[in-house]
Image (cartoon, rainbow, N blue to C red; front, side, top):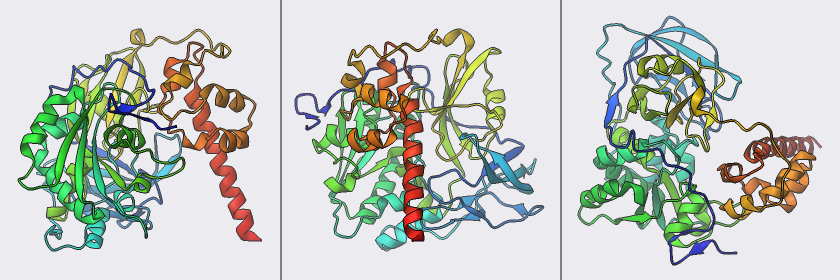
Amino acid sequence: MGLFNIRKSTFKHGVHPPEHKEETNGLPIRQFSFAPLIILPMAQHIGAPSQIVVREGQEVTRGQLLAKAGGYVSVPLHAPISGTIRKIANVPTISGKMSMGIYLEAFPASSQEVLEGTPVDVETATAEEILKGIQDAGIVGLGGAAFPTHVKLKVPEGKHCEILMINGIECEPYLTTDHRVMLEQAEDIFTGIEYLLKATGAERAIIGIEANKQDAADHLEKMIPEGAPVSVKVVPVKYPQGSEKMLITSVLGREVPSGGLPIEVGVVVVNVATTAEIGRLLPHGRGIQERVVTITGPGVKKKGNYLIPIGTPLRYVLDQVGVDEHVSEVYMGGPMMGVAVSNLDISIVKGTSGIVVFAEKDVKRPDKVYPCIKCGACVDACPISLNPSKLGILAKFEAYDQMAEAYHLMDCFECGSCSYVCPSHIPLVQYFRLSKSIVRKRNTAKQTAEHAK
C-alpha cells in the first residue's frame, strides 16, 4: 500500500504529541562553559569504536587527534578541549555498558583555540576526497542516529543518487537544535550542501522543514546561493516526519521498500546540523569538537540551545543550567525516541541532540499495564503500517522469529507512536526494541555458525 497522500503532502498515520518547543525555539545558540574534566567514550557512534592514539600524561591541543577510526564504519575522535590526558580507562555510556575512554583534564587558562588542519577544497576535491575528509573530521549523523556520515554518503555500485534531501524536520517534542542551526548557520548549511552534492553526485537538493519552523524556511529560501540547485519544501507538522522514509514520502511521494534504504528510490538523506558541520569543518580541515544541544523540559531552570564540547559530563551540564531539586527523569534526546538516563556520569556524545528534564510533579505514570483491548489505535498510528498490537502479543510469547518474518518487526524504527496512543499503557516500543536486539543476536550467531562450517 502506498503511503503518499497527494492532498496533504505527507505520510499516512503518525501522531501529534504536544510540541513544547516555544520555550527554546526563540533562544539563540550560546557557548557552554568548558568542564574541568571531559570524559570521552570511544564507542559513541554506530560501527567499530575509535582506537586511542594518545597516552596517559600527554598534553593535547583542542582539535588534536585522540583516536583514529577503528575501520571503515568508524570515525576518529578529536580533542574537544586543550588539556592533559589524565586517564585511559573504561567509562560509563548511556547504553549501560562500559566503553574504553579518555579522561581529559582542561588547562585552566587555555584560550581553547582550535587547530587548523588540511582544508578540503570543494572546487578541486574529488567525491572520494570529500568522503575521506568527512570521515577524517569525525562526522556522524547529528540527528541522533550517530551513523558515520561518509558511509551513508557512499552510493553503492549500480545505484544513482538523484536527490539530496536535507532533513530539517526536527519533529521530536521539546527539541529546537536544528531550528536554531537553520536560523544561525545558513552559510555553513549551503557550503555543506555543496560538498554533499559533489560527494553523492546528486542533481539537486531539497531542504525539508515542518510548518512550525516557517521562519527558518523563509530564512533559508532567501539565503540560497544564486544558481544553486537547492529548494526548500515546507510540510505539515506530524510525528515522526523526521524519519528518512517518512520525509521522502512526504516530499517526493516515493516509498522506500521494506528493508531498503533511501538510495533504492534515488535519494540520500542528511540531517541539517550534520550538513552545517560539514560546511564548517571541511574548509579548515578540522575535526568535530562540539555540537549544538537543546537543554529543556519543565525541570530545567536555564533552558536554551547550547554549543557544548563533546565529552562534557551530564552531571556538570545539569549543574550549570540548574534543575528542579526533585528531578524524576532525564532524557538524552526527546521524550519520544530519546533514552531515559540511569547514570548522570555519562557524557554528551556526538549523537546527543537534546537533554530533557522532568521533575517529579511533571511525570504521570500509569498505575499498571492493562491487557490489549484490540482497539486498533496503534495500527492507526504506525507510520509504516505495521500491526503493533499483534507484534506486542508475539513479543510477550517470545515468538521472535514470527515477529521478524511474518510481521516485519525489523522495519520498525522505534518512533514510539504506538506506545504513545495505547490506552492500556503497554510499552510496545520497549518490547520491539528488545525483540529486535534478540533477532539481531540470533542472526549473528547463525551467520557465525555457518562460517565455521
